[in-house]
Image (cartoon, rainbow, N blue to C red; front, side, top):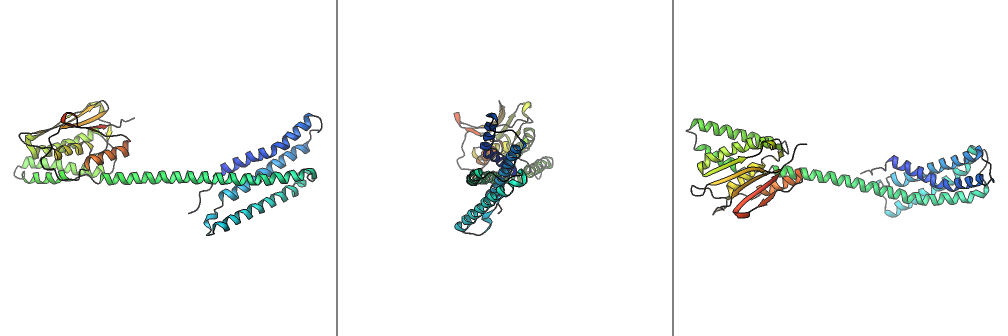
Length: 344
């Protein structure tokens, strides 16, 4: 895989900065000379300064590009060979730089470089090459880390989406099979059977559609819960009551699809429902949350299931809303609090 190149803007800004820093001693020397009267200000000094500045910028840019943006890892070399090639290329670039700054100086300035400055210029280029190499490596490491962070975030997001999809696909169809069993006892009561089938059809459609969205308005959830309640009351008659009391102002707030139904189903599956112990499930709003609660009357025989309904709901809330589903069992009341996503 090809490396992600360091942005050209970063390379150019670094080259400009280093060009200024390397040219600074000469600038200070010229300024002091002019201020003290030892040098006369002339166009020659201007061209000299501009030549050095532009040359060091171009040289800096070349070294940075060589060490930051050439993908040596694309070649199947050993570490020793790769380091040797990088070292040789940097030395060659350094020698070319030393040659060019002397060869081009007369062309742009009309005179050769002062022999007294030759050693200083060479010393400057050598030190600049060393500094540029380490800066280039820092830019390379910084870019690689940034790319790694982006890839990790993308992978994390993909994993979260996959996990959310898996959780949504684990919705327990237990109540649907119970509903079909109840339907068999109603085939002789045409009107009620028709209503039952209509409710069941709506629920199937809602469940299928819920796979296409992560959050739904509470009013849609309540409509689905109403259909589910009808099925449960058809099965259990007067042995179950599902009481709903939610503030109208919260109807457009959003929750994960099937959240309320899964909690009511959880109450049905894990509590005794009989003539002597009818079950009442309350669904109501409190502050900025929805509450689903029921008295704890544990079944003598546990209902079939893996106990994943509440766990999956908690995971979906964390993934979608970054909020915790709160569960309590105080005073023999099983209570689940669902925080809401308010529309902005």
